Length: 175
Image (tube, rainbow, N blue to C red; front, side, top):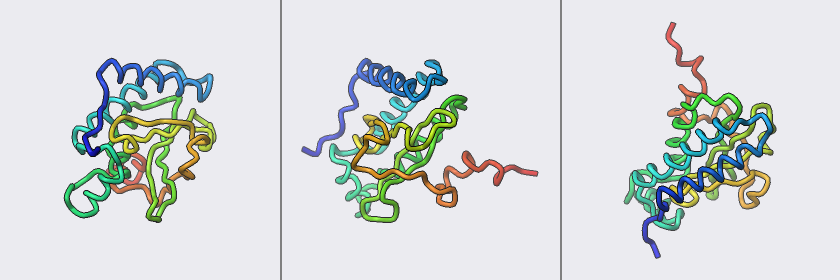
C-alpha cells in the first residue's frame, strides 16, 4: 500500500514522452515537433530521476507527512517543481514558455507545478506538468481540465530563491 512508485520501463516512458510531445504540439501550430520532443523527453526522464532521489511512497500526501515531520529531508511539491524547472529551462525553448504556478497558494492545500504555453498563448490555455502528483511518473493535463486545482501564475516576487538566477538574470549579472 505504501510501496515506492513504479516509473514504468524505458519503453513506457518513451511512449509517455511521445504522448506529451503530441499534446504540447496541440498548444499551437507554431510549436515544432523537435522542441516539443525535447521538452517531453526531458520532463519525463528528469521526473523519473527525481523519483530516484526522493524515493516517494505511492501516496504523495504520505511523503509530505514524512517531510513535514522530519523523517525525510525533501519531497514536497514545490521541491519537485523547483528541481525539474532548471532542466526544462536549459532547453532554451523558442516556441514554448514555462511558467511557475501554484494552486491555493498559502493554504494547507497549496500545490505547485509548471505550466507550459505556446509563445504568446494565455496562461489559462496551457498544459500543467506535475512531477509530484504521481511521485515522479510525470502527470500532465490541460490547465482548464485540471478541475481539482485552481492554478495561478506564481507572482514574480514569490519566485523561489533557487530559481531567481534563471528567471531574473538581470539581478544576477556581474558588472
